[in-house]
Image (cartoon, rainbow, N blue to C red; front, side):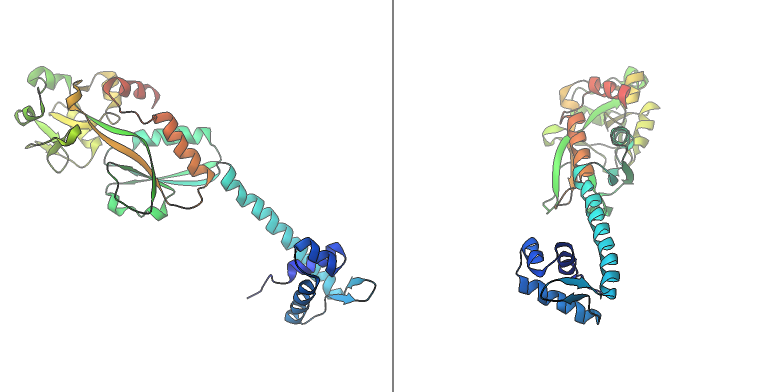
Amino acid sequence: MPSWRGIEEFLAVVRHGSFTAAGEKLGVSKSFVSKTVQELEHRLGVQLLVRTTRRLSLTGAGKCFHAQCSEIQEQLAQLERSIGRYSSEPIGRLKVGLSDIFGSDFMSMMLAEFSRENPAVVIEVVAYLDEGEIAQERYDVVIRYGELPSSSLRARLFGYLSHGLCASPDYVARKGWPAGPDDLREHDCLTDLSGIIRFNGGAEVKVSPRWRSNSGTSLRGAVRQGLGIASLPLTVVRHGLADGSVIALEEEWSFYDRECWVVYSPGIMAASTRAFIDFLVRYVNREKVRPARAKVLASRY
């Protein structure tokens, strides 16, 4: 395999005119520079420099080798400057994993706004249904919800996935709202595949749902058709809340807030990743969403 060893010393000797000056510039001894250049010549099988007591000069092979190595050195310097931009400004690809269980449209809209602010970043969004299917190392960031398992990964809390009890105006006119969690057993409930509706503080109610789905978008459709009550992320139904096709119970006991985390791998962080994380924290502001806030979000996203 070709080696760069000796080339930097050779270029420094030519640039500064002597082994002594090259050693001083590189922070090594004159003898080290001389030995390294000699090793380079032996490896190449040609003499690059003519050494006399008064001066150094390049051989024909040395002139050719020097010209091409100088060009390569400049290309490497340009490459280093170019790659260095990834740590100083938002550029390049940003690959993001989003949960499609809770509807990825809200986060996708936020990503679009981030993209408008950072046109040099190329966004790649992958929606997932099962967190187990996500290989974190294949993504720059993954949006995850709830309690995180212990791992070597790094995470930053940026907000909450706030669930609220939602129904259509027609359903509420016919059946009313539950007075507490246990009253849900007397209602037509729409749930995820577990059949459990959860609340803050660890409370949960097992119901017999008439409709189950692992998709928040699917449950939203069933709610809008008046099929029953569902505990849905308020960001998923934000437009329904805004246009009145969906209403949410305003009682504080009825909410379930799950932490929203942006998870990323340890190591040196690219500027695009850092900018996106800061963007999430700035715009979501770690706040819990309630119906009034969801309506405001609907006007923006």
